[in-house]
Length: 82
Image (spheres, rainbow, N blue to C red):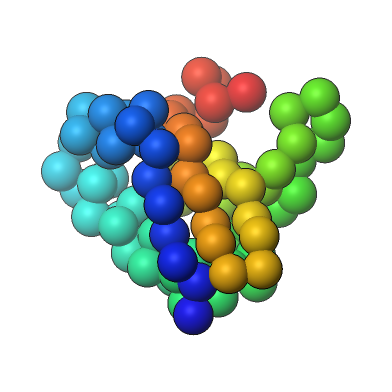
């Protein structure tokens, strides 16, 4: 089990999402808390961005991963995420 920390920017992003997407993102965050980088649709990002991303339809959850901690720093549409 991993501890999940949402940065302020990710909380704001989550609040602005449509209701259907927000529920799917919440399920994806729950999966991240259980499985970390081994969750479905997770890929390592290439430099200069770095970190990881999880795909949720047209949206991306951008996060960093540590041994016990997942820090989510952005949740946005694919076109705006990178």
